Image 1 (cartoon, one colour):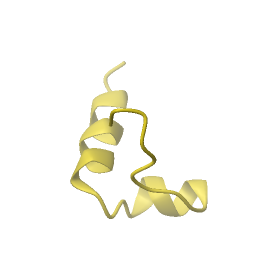
Image 2: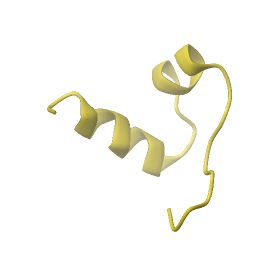
Image 3: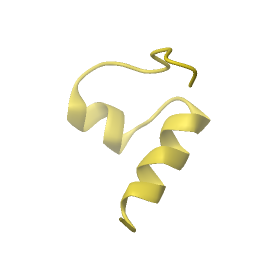
Image 4: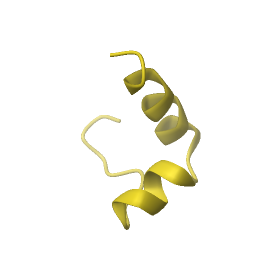
Amino acid sequence: RQGRVVEYGDVDEVFDHPQQEYTRELASASLYI
């Protein structure tokens, strides 16, 4: 997001329980790549 960190933490925690909508959308899109 314009070079800003929107979420950080343990990799498993961020991907299993994202807090930000942007992170959820990004993670769901990466499943199709």
